[in-house]
Each structure stands twice: as structure tokens, then as C-alpha cells.
Image 1: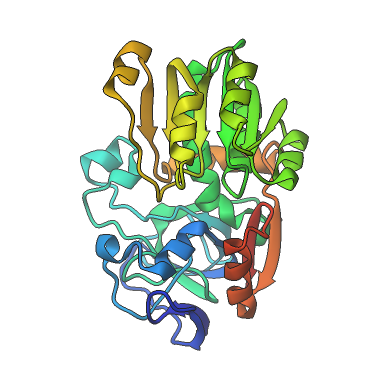
Image 2 (image 1 turned 60 degrees about the vertical axis):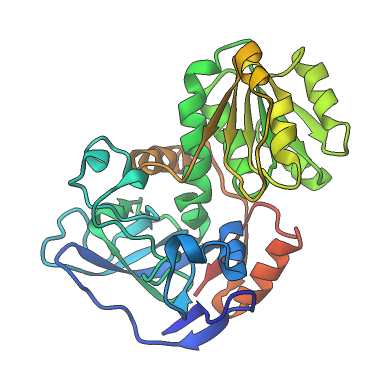
Length: 342
């Protein structure tokens, strides 16, 4: 099969011919990929940012936002059948540890693996090996390419919004900083789950135009005056700020836009957060980290997606155009999410 593999960090991946994945256990599932999202994390992977965390053997196939059709199942799989349309939670977990039993898939301490970020090949390929625990069955008429990026970009944004719901009652304000592949999902999830006033912040006017169409009541251009603009709009700071940038100073801007007793949800990464301890004490402000989400988060998000309440805005590329997709994403040319279609 064809697959996009990283051979050396800080060099472009290549499209290789490799063997199709095989079942390795009774709960394994082989999925024929119908769509694979291209994520900023893939750029970080190619750059080598994750090599000391996941320490994969090179070369390996990237791609952790995947959807498609069940191609083959292990002997113990009962929740899906061959031919089913599925979207895949990005980290198949063990199901037996305390974290899994509490529904915290990303904190699994058992036999979890992360296709596309580890020694387990990802989905920028024609086929992918995962497990039954990762499969969320979809309506059979769903096009996997339309929803694939919800497996990471979507679930990550939804997970943070879901945690913020108790704080976002009528009369509150929420800021989404960075209305890209994740942020535009957060805007829609906020509109679907809360009664808060949504303010979108981005340096790209096209991104703000999209945000306005999908639920943002106010938009602010990140032009150096945006922190003050948000403070003016919110009377001193927002109830909740979702920071999908978190680098090059944006992480400090997000904190400054968070109001007293507010919550700053950090979803982007690459920067360094520093704040005076007095800000925490006197302001009673909170910083909350987020990574991906739970299986239930993904299942709930798919209910919203299939009801048309959350729509993934995508640009499709063929699998052999993977480098174009990665370069366009790096250059900020992708509105919404780039999707590779084998």
C-alpha cells in the first residue's frame, strides 16, 4: 500500500510502498482509510518535537485523525463488522486500568498506543491497524473524509468546551483564540452546548469571517491591540478563554484576556506560560491543560456532527499530495482542516 512516512526529522516525509498492516490480536481492527486529517502536530512530529516523548523508530507512518471503513476484524471484536463506517479515537486504550474505567482514555496506564505518533503506524496510508476500543460506528452514508479530523482536532476542541460548560451560563463570555482547524470546531461546540457570548480572535480576516458565520458574535483581529479589545468587550476579561495558539506570546495574551475567577484552557503548545503568582491569588484565575479527549467525547461530537450542528470545514488533497497539504498548513493557507483521501 501507499503510505506517508517520516524517515528523518526536519526533512519532508515521503510517499512509500509498504506492506499492509496485519491483525496482531483478537481485538484488532484493520480500517480502510477514507480520510486522514493533516494536523499541526504532524508538522511538530516532522520537526522532531515529539521524538523524546514517543521515541518512535524511523521510518514510520504519520496521521492520527482517521476515519474509514472496517476492512478486517479480530476474533473477539463484537462492536463493529466488516464494511462499517467508523471514526477512530486516536489512542486505543486498554480498558482495564483505573483511568480507562473512569473514562479517561488519554491517561491510560495499560496497553495503550497512539498510531501516527509512536511505533504504531498512522493513517496517512491506505490501511491502518487499530483496536475495537477506538472505533466509533457512524451512519453508513457518512463520508469519512468529511469527519476524519474530528478524531483529533474535533475531539480536542470538544473536550475543552465540554469541561467549560458549567462556567458558561447566560451572561458569560468565551474567547476562542485561533480559529483554525480546532478553533472553528470550538466555536460551533460552544454555540451548540452553551448560552455564552462567543468572541473569536485571529490574525487572519478570513478565519474571523468563518467564525462569524458559525456562531461567533464578536470578532477581533489579533493585531497587537486585541487584548485590550477583548477586555473592552468583556468588561475586564472573559469568563473562559480557549487558547488554540499558545506560542509566540499568544499564551500570555490568552492569560491577559481571562477575567477574574476565569478559566484559561490551553490547547495549543510550543510556547512557555509564565505569570506572577499574585495573578493566581488575587484574580483567582485558573489555567487548565487539555489533550485530545475521551471516547465518549468523540461519540457525543459525532452526534452533533451527524445532526449538522458541528461542520468540519475541509480542503481535500489526494494521498500523493501530502507534502502540498503539509506545506500549505505550515504557510497558513488552509482554512479549516486539510484532509488526505487515499
